[in-house]
Every structure is written in structure tokens, then in C-alpha cells.
Image 1: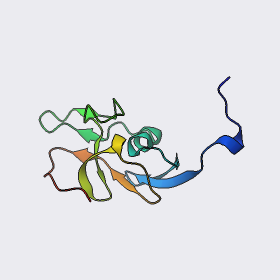
Image 2: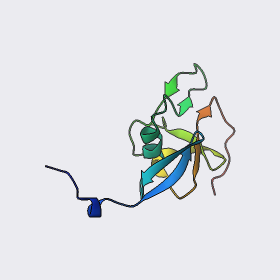
Image 3: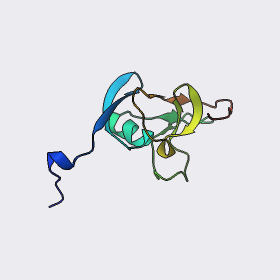
Image 4: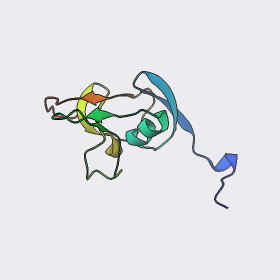
Length: 100
């Protein structure tokens, strides 16, 4: 019922999620790339080390914090993927740094 024809599907781009190349639809978020990669977690909470994955997908919960292209504390759900982007898990607390 909701299937799309191949000519209607968006182009894909390749990003690296925790070192693995993943084909992601153009215009998708980095959080979507993380979910497509099937990682068990994208970050761990600083206090208990509990694993977290993207949850709200709209920038409210902060469960998708990741290191993106070497910059920690990025909300992956608010970052659009670009070719060659490197998305890495964030473990524990990271020092805040201004985003580019």
C-alpha cells in the first residue's frame, strides 16, 4: 500500500557509523544512520553507564548525543548526514565544545 517505486526512492550516501560504512537516504539524520547501523547504543550515560539510542528524533530527549566528525555532544537527530560523515558513539561525559 505504501511501497515506493525505485525511481521514487531518494538517493543514498555513505557515512561511517562506529567505523562501518552505511548507505543512508540523502537528507536523513545522523540518528537515522545510527538506527540503520543496528548499534546496541550510541552513547552511555555519564553516571551509570546505561546504554542509549535515539528516542524522540526531534531534539528533546538528548539520548542521541554522539561524536560527529570529531565533535562531541552533537544531537544526532538534528544533524543531516553528509557524504563521508563519521558518527561515533559517545561514552561517558565529554567536555562541551562549540559546534562548527
